[in-house]
Amino acid sequence: MKRILTTAAALSVLATAAFADGHGKNPMVGGAEMFAEKNIVENAVNSADHTTLVAAVQAAGLVDTLQSDGPFTVFAPVNDAFAALPAGTVETLLMAENIDQLTKILTCHVVAADVMSAALVGMIEADGGVHDIATVGGCTLKGSVSDGMVKIEDETGGIATVTIADVKQSNGVIHVIDKVLLPAM
Image 1 (tube, rainbow, N blue to C red):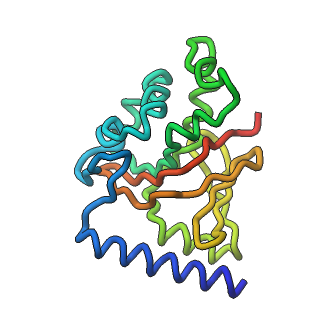
Image 2 (tube, one colour):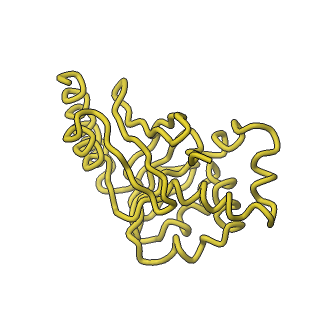
């Protein structure tokens, strides 16, 4: 427990220092600047690391939702996360007859709240090291801290690491992750 609290404190200090060093600017994502005054979709389309996610959001008809007022927290998997799925999975999910399944997967990456990393680490700490995260897709993810990094466990036991935290948006925040989160099917 003491290690988790120490890790959480260290993450909060690192997040604060990173924010101060950037003079209030968002981190770069996928080689592109992320603008706090733009919404989730407006920023995501500029990230070279999120082209698969953007295509999936478009195919599922979620663009208007993610451009709305929110607030939303999006755990945004990079292209390599989608590429790590079994061969043919992405192509199959993008087919019209599989849109419901695609929508379920995508909405399991979205929380109906604006949750910055310091707040998430605080909730993890308050819950004894693991915090349940309810998504708009009806999934329950589990947040934890391990080796100084925020981890998100999906309903299948898969674990994603937050690689870039606190990318502020006009309608919420994006946390970049290295794995696609899957619902229990």
